[in-house]
Image (cartoon, rainbow, N blue to C red; front, side):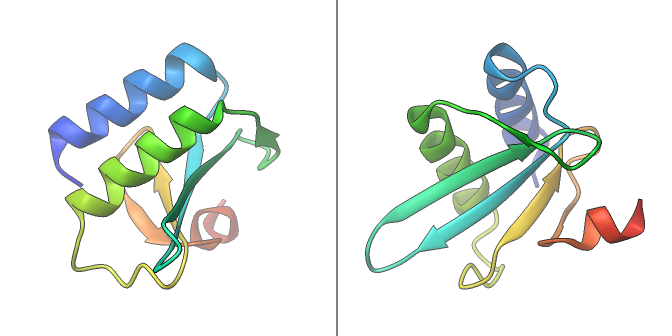
Length: 92
């Protein structure tokens, strides 16, 4: 993920969910459902406003068009690393 997108995502999430550590991106096309679900270090959900979920999902998916967005991906907010969903939890 580009440095600019990583900073935009991290800054936006820190304002509304300071405990967020990982964000899971889901893109459902053609229905246009774009969601970003945040999780803390213990992999527990952290609530986000819907507008933030949608904006973060758009930023990440548009920044990484080569990923297969038919599948969910996780973003490590500390490093900007993007991996298939669940891989970060397994590595912990």
